Length: 254
Image (cartoon, rainbow, N blue to C red; front, side, top):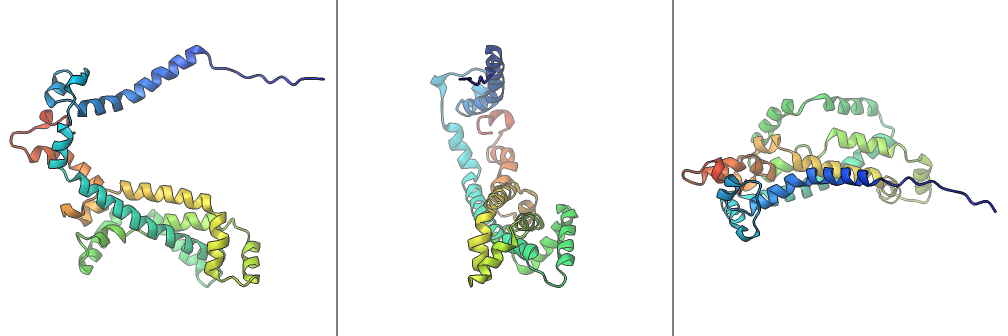
């Protein structure tokens, strides 16, 4: 009987040493930030690289929550991500399904116009959108944060390309069995394109969470600011709420 031999290359000890050194380099800045946030501000300036468990304090976190509306920013961001993300994930796949599987007059023209909008930079659209929000009375409201951009061209394009790969025979089989169009979409198309929907969900959440320019323009009310806007003015809010404070005295909070 012949035995098949499989050669397996094992990492050398030096490779483990190199990987361990790289891990330390990548993790150390995070460790320094966390440990510094638990130290008094004077200790951070006097000995930034030292760490003493006996001097740990939560005063920096208490002062930060008193000076900066981080809780409000978290809640606003959570609301915008949940509602705007739900609109995107519900409506854009339906639009992509229509462009991919239906034949109607002007389909290619409409899809071409949709693709042309991807060439427009965000800054070009800000002023028209702001004028629309002003005429609707939606400035400093959640509607201004949620509705613009909830149905975007890239999401429709992504879903159209994903759904186009679904065989038409599956849809015809559903129609023969008497299923309506929405039921075909929900019961046949959605299970097939779940990987594409999952990828779109990740991209949608990241884009909404990282959005900064539009929330700054559409909202100047502290009660409606998202987390990105709050973080952008973090240092100003901390130092502005204290007499004689500067960046060197609020390192722990920052």
